Image (tube, rainbow, N blue to C red; front, side, top):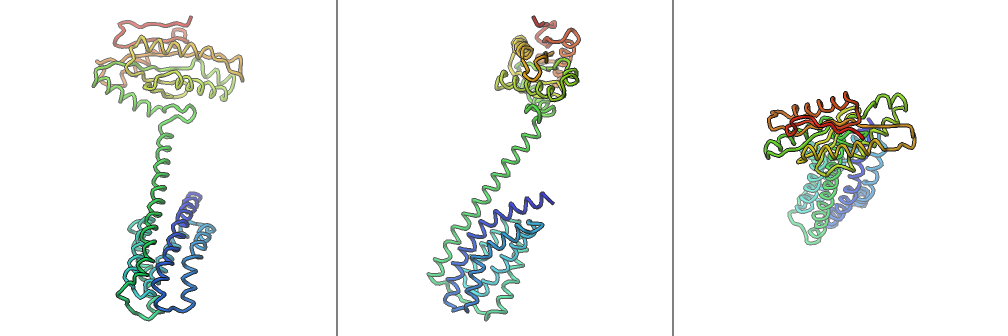
Length: 357
């Protein structure tokens, strides 16, 4: 119900603007067509109510309704009914009639597509029927110059306004879609790519390396004894450590590098076109800087990283094998004392151990 209410209020606000402008311009068009017919005072009064007061009444009706979305759709049917009524009252004067019907059809299509166009058309036909009962059925085959000029503002300004409203709505929806896509691709705590998105990027990088016959490296990073940090200092402190590492990754990696949170206390990085030795230097510098961080809330908190690196291997047929090389290197880093970088890959016949000094 809350979603429907928010959607309905948003629709009501958008239609309030377009309805106010459209009916004001429509009042000018209908008044010019009715003037030569010498209508009764009550007809003039009804025109003023429809053209000036009704937009505000319709908005308040929708805003105060339990389901604003449904109330606004009823308002649109009332608009269509009254449009049909004025078509009959104008005795089907060609240009004012065509202007009224086409502007309302355009509005109904913009709001609800073909389905609402049909519903609005039915309401218009009903309004024409009521108008024929009240007014003497007649047809005026000619449109005067005054009536022509009175229709021009509605024919020019209203489509422009409706188009602008539709453009803004499409722009807003596009922005929301991009924001939702970004949220679905990133980890909420660190702001880095999430597990699935990073692996998708790894597959893309693997295929690029195969296609261009160029190398690169990937790194898996583990925060040493992270469970102990959570148990000793609390999960808030653990979250601070995770965010601090993600911040360092964003600040110290190249624009082309792709960092993500692999899960829990593990992070992952793609380092395109970077030889394994250079990647090891970058990762060891990251490890060293991270180990020297001070945490104001917990001065006693000490942190370190174990990092496994793997170079692209042209012999691999799948990106998973590349990732497995990095995982094996990380396992070796964790089982040989932690706080170190272990390298492995096709361009290293043996593993290279970079110990902390």
